[in-house]
Structures are given as structure tokens and as C-alpha cells.
Image (cartoon, rainbow, N blue to C red; front, side, top):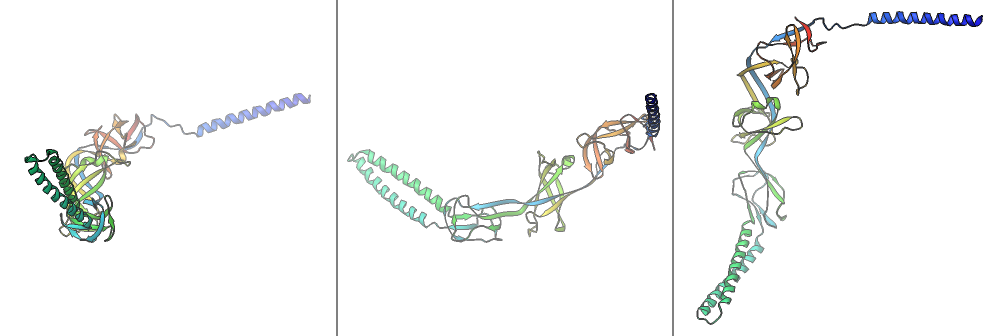
Length: 349
């Protein structure tokens, strides 16, 4: 009897638990929000129209010397004189450094004596050969020796000319790397010569704004430390390979002031300020969904939001210029992206 009662109690408890769980499930289901995909989503939208593209951009860069060279010697020798010091302004062809050429001069004097002797022998052998007193082979050997000696002398004279090191171009001595008494050798720099009469100005530009710069076109350039000075730069090269940040180098040629106020490694900006350069389709950058590699917008058609791929030509502050994917008169979503999906019903507010 007790066993039957226990079984009945267990069955009753099971039934109670089942009923309670069923009730909890129903309550939970009633509390869960069920999103209705057919319900229209309220959005804000704008109709696209072609308008003048306003460009007001600044790109920071640095000035570089037009020519910057380490001057060294082509031959070995002790330095006996410096004609310049750091800060000296020199012109092309002016002497910079003098090396000791005493040993080379002695070698030239010795070869001059040898040449003089060979020339005397050559005249004597020529007379004897014409008289058939000796064989012509002695004259031939003497003439060959004379030719070799003259070549040797020319080599020594060339080396002697290199004991004086001249400026390869006009500029300023920006660094002196050795002193009188030091030993000069090929490949060992003696001083640094810099030409800043003309400058190079370098900036890095993103791929979206690369077409703002054209070779041989002129642009306005400012110097950070000289805000009242305005220069004109000519684009000499547009980079064909981007760096890791996907920026491309643009190089300008800039003429320095007469008193050379702009120094190498100073910072500056290239300024592009052009309104109405051309017409095009521009939209707010906030209207773009997705990444720069695959930009998209929501196009409003027949009260539906259609996700559409676009191609960005360039970015201009808070706007982007569209190269492809949209046309004048199209309507795009500008805000209200929460819960928005491709094909959603929308209500334009």
C-alpha cells in the first residue's frame, strides 16, 4: 500500500512540474520580441544631384635639397688644406680640399727623365738604323718603351690633378667630416655639399585623392615656419607604387627664396583650394556602408532599400565623390540604418 502511495505522489509531482514548465515557456514566448521584417523602417533620404565639386585640401610634406652629395677623394693621400668650412657657400668648380701631391710630383719628375733618355736613344737608333749600322729591332723596342713611359706620365698627371678636389655643383657646405692631417681615400667622405637654391617638396596622398595631382601642373605651397611666404611648386613625379598605408608619393620642384630662407627638412603644406573645378556626384561619407574596398549605399526604390555597390573617386572631408554606381535623381538613405537590410520596406521621413 505504501508503495502505491509513493508512486502516486511521484506522478503528481511530475505533473505539477510539467504544468509549471509549460506555463513558464508560454510566459517567456510572450515576452520575446518578434521582429516583423515586413514592417516599414523609418529613414531619412536625399535625392542626388550633380553639383560643383569643392576642393579645399592641405597635405603636409617636407622640403628636401635639390642636390645633396658626400664629397670624397678619388685617390689616396694626406689632407694638407681645407679651402672651406661648414657653412661656406661655394660655386661649381671652386676648390674644396687639397691633398699632398709631393710623391706624385717626384714620380712625374722621374718619368720625365726616363722619357728624355728614351727620346735621345730613339734619335740615335734612328740614325744608326738608317745607316744600316744596327738592326731596326732596337729602335722598335725603344719607341715602344717611349710610348709606355708617356702613358705612365699621363696617368700620374691625371692622379696629380685629383689632389685638388673641386665642387661638383654650387651649394653650401653643410658638414665637414675630416680635418687637415687626416688620410683621404676613395669612398671616405670628406664633407657634405648641399644645393638648396632649388628644392624638392614631398607629400604622400591617398589613392582617393591621387587624381588631384598632375605632372607639370603648378600648386600653392606654404612653409610652416614662414606663414606669410607663399611658393609655387611644379609636380615632377606622381608615385606609381603606394606604401603600406596605401599612400602615394608626390614630388614638387620649388625655387627657394634669393636669401635661401627655406632649409632642407623644413615642413610645409601643399594647398588645393578650388571651387567648381568640375561637376560631379557627391554624397555624405556617412551614407556609405561597408569598407573602402567594397563601398555600398542603400538606394530607395519603390519604397524599398536596395543595397547598391558604388565606386568612390575621392574623399573630400565629410563627403565622397562617386565615380560609378549612382546617377542624378537617385534617392539614397542618409540615416536610419538601424535594423535596415537589403530589400527592407522603408518610409522616408
